[in-house]
Length: 318
Ligand code: KPL
Image 1 (cartoon, rainbow, N blue to C red):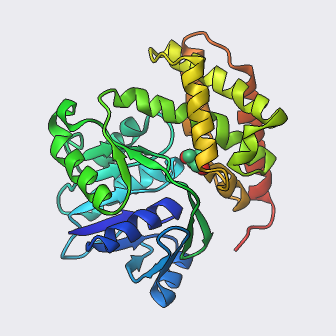
Image 2: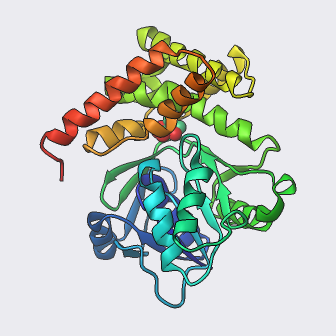
C-alpha cells in the first residue's frame, strides 16, 4: 500500500520505518533537514529493531500520481490544522487518515481543517488514535526508540462509518510491529493519555529531566499534584478515574519510558512551540468552564509558555 507519513518527526519516522519493514511504500513528509538526511543516508532507527530504512522523503505536502492510499498525520497539535487542510487539498479524494496527536479536541480541529481543505465529510475517513510510543529524534533522519509503548484506536464495532478505516490502521500498525489496543471506551482512553501527559510533559520540559526522574522525590510529588488536578478536570467532563488508576498509569508510562525525553522537553530544547495548549491548556479550559480551579496546572502552563517565549527569542539550534 502507498502510505504518506505527514510530519515525520520522531514518532512519524518510526511508524514509517515499521510500515516499510512490513512491505509498504512509504513517503515521509518532513522538515528539509530530515528529507536531506533520509535521501542521503536513509532513516536510521536506533534501539530495538536497529536498522536503516531507505524511504522516499519530501518537505512539501504535495502528492503526485500514484497518490497515497492512506496517510498518518503525525504532526504536533500546533501544526495539526494547517497540515490537515494541506493534506485534504493535496489529494484528489479522501483517504484513511490517522490522527495520533497528544491532547484533547483533536478530531474537532482536524475535521474543521479537512472541510476547509475540501473534504465534505471527513468523519468516515479520520481515525483518532493515542499512543505511548517513546521515540526520540536524535538528529535529522536518526530516531531512537527508548522502551516500549502502545497505540490505542477506537473499537471498530462501536465506531460507525469510520470502522473500516480503524480496522485498516489497526492491521497496518500491528503488521508494522506496534502493539495496538482497541478499547470500547476510547474517549476515556484519550483522557487517560491526556492525564499522563499532563503529569509528565510540562514538568519534564520545565525541569529538563527524563521521564523516569519523575518517579521519585520532590519531582514525583509535583507530578502527582498535576495528575490529581487533571483527574478533577476529567471528572468534571464526565470521565471518572480513581486515584489508584491514574497513579498506576503514570508510574507505568514513566517507567516504560524512563530514559525518554518527553516530546515537550524535546520541543522546548529545539526552540519550537509545544503541545502545552492541547494538553494542559485544554484541561484548564474544560475545568474552568465547569468552575473548577487547577492552580498547579495554571502555574506550569504559564511556566512552559514563558520558556517557549524565552527560547524562541534566543539563538535557534540548527
Ligand atoms: O507521550 C509522551 C510524550 O513524550 O509526549 C510520553 C508517553 C510521555 C513519552 O515521553
